[in-house]
Each structure stands twice: as structure tokens, then as C-alpha cells.
Length: 117
Length: 110
Figure 1 (cartoon, rainbow over the protein chains, first blue to last red):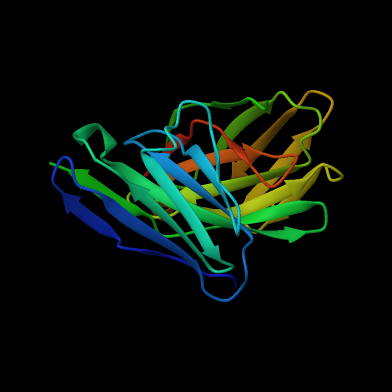
Figure 2: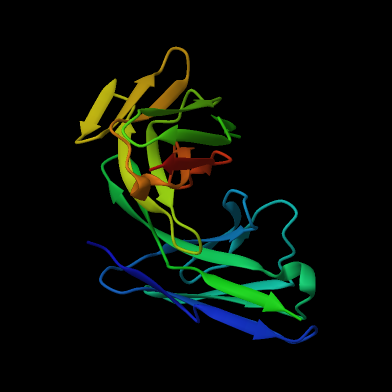
């Protein structure tokens, strides 16, 4: 089956620093990838849609200058949390869709636990 | 946009009992309804899905039903086991972007 990886699996950083999270589709190409944020005991909240070769599409309320997304190749999307603050501490998950007829199945990465101190 | 409601938020059952989780959606254009199981600190895993041209689908102890007219779909788990304990999310999509329910924490007591 399709595999999506994320790196790192967890990271601790100091307030004010930036953190980059990578999302890779290992055995398929993904022109689109999605980035989610999940707070404890809550659902997955879509942050942005990453588009290969073009700008990302951000959901309402998500600061594009704070959460920088780059999708430079068909297998890699990166999310950079800039000037991180404790409230950015969360579980970040990416997914990549594979179309099947008129629908798309999502393949999720294992997630990245970010803790900002 | 799509709005997905999921109930209950917590479900506690005894091993061997059945568990039912229900979701409703608002966008009549939604045509794909996956269900995910997420264990603590891990990625969501697809356990079953159903498309809008099907009313019911079953895979061993897991089944999903869809009522397009009423815009609701349900997950049924029979003969629950302790390893079924996890958070379950429903989702609905009409494009490549799913909208998730809030999740149901299923606890199966041995």
C-alpha cells in the first residue's frame, strides 16, 4: 500500500525559533498534500493544502506567514512553523490523496509532535 | 462548506458487545465516507469506507451503512475486543478534501 512518512516524529524547540517538518510520499507521487493540526482529544483540523509547484491554499484563520509550506517536488512537502510559541505545540499530520475513480483516499503520515517551550 | 456531526463523543462497552457510532453530513454533493481509527499518538488509519452509490458495506466485524436521503452514515463494530479501544473519526468528502467529525473515543472493557 501507499506509504507517507514524516520527519521528525517529535521535536522540542524554544519559543521564537523555527521548526521544519517534512512529509514524503514514499512510493507514489503526490501533486497535492494536506497539513493538519490536532490538539489533544480533538479532531484533525485542516491547516492548508500544499500544491506541487504553486502556492499553498490556507484555511481560514491559519496564518500563511507563520506556517510556511513548500511543495518543491512530487514526493515532498514541508511545513515550517516560524517564530514558534507554546500555543503552537500540537500534533501535526500530513496526508496525501490517491484518486480512485471520483473519490480520493487519504494516506496519512505518522505525525510530528511539536512541543514549544 | 461541509459540516460533519459525530455522536457519541465517548462510548464505553463491554468486550463482546456491539458498538455503533453515527455521523451526519450537510453537503448533498459528498460522495465518499471513510472511517478512521486513531490510537494515541499515531496516525489515523482507514478501517472502512463507503461510496455514495452503496448503502452498506461490511468487512468482518466492521460494517458501515449510508442513508443518502437522510444524510447520515454509521459505523457498526460487532464482538468488540479490547484492542478496538481507540478514537474513531468519520469523514465526508465531495472532492479530495475530507471533513472530519469530532471523533468518538471507544473504550472496550475486558
